[in-house]
Amino acid sequence: MTDVSPISANPREVAAQIFRARAHSAEVEARPQSEITNKPRSFNPPMPKRYYYYLMAPAIAILAFISLYPFFWLIVMSLQDVDIGGGEWVGFKNYVKLFSDGRFLDGWWLLAQYSVMCLGLQVGLGVLLAVVVNSSKYEKYLVTALLMPMMMAPAVAGLLWLFLYNGTFGWYHWILQSAGILDNASILASANTAMYAIVLVDVWQWTPLITIIALAGLKRVPRDQLEANMVDGASPLRNFFAITMPNLYPVLLIAVLLRFMDNFRFIDSVLVLTGGGPGSATKILPVYLFEVAFKFFKLGRGAAIALTLLIVTIILGKLLVRVFEKPQNEKG
Image (cartoon, rainbow, N blue to C red):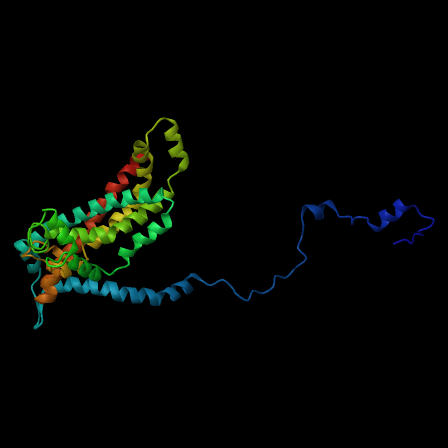
């Protein structure tokens, strides 16, 4: 750089020389090049896909052992006459006998009644409670209170209601008897009321699950659609069925499927309350399966009942999915 005397030189020329911009060619500006010519070696090179399969292999093997192996063994047992003394191959004889078993057919009929009553009451009450909780300023406290029955084990819930239904000191028995609904007999000792008693226990414990799921669905209902429909003159009730319910169908499908599958396999409270009685008034199919397999140790016949129950559950579950998806498809 040429030396410039600060006394004789023009200040503008001095500033221009000191703060002059570096000249770059148009080619350099248009095509910038990196100053790093050699890319540094990476210490964590990307792993091949088979590496991740190796990591998942132990978990997959454990899941296959605890799920697939018992399933195939269930199929094998259903084709044998298995009891404590051993097993004998009988083919499809266990399945053929089921169609002539009156208790098996009655178990299906009682299970259908039990599931329909439980699902109908739980979905109706669950959606109603979700709407009430969603519009309340005490939402957090109400949600906490609703979660309490769900946190209780089904067997413990059965014991609690067994005391409430007791014909000597049961509170609910005293209320129903005072209202003239019951006579001196316990609600669990009558074939006419025992089924309603176990349904009430299931509804009390698991309606909060439907409420929580429906409440989550209400949070995702678009506010603009609700406000636009109200501007058009729609009443709150019509607004609920026209806007809110269609948006609740996906979450209600999850809730109904969960409760449907649970009703087909949970027998804890039923065994505690009635054990299938009085007589066979509450001997739904899972209870009958429990008696055949673990009380009389007819494991082959029990496996046939269990496999039949599993197949019917899958078929009915797919039908429920179609029923709930139909309004969504029509909406789309």
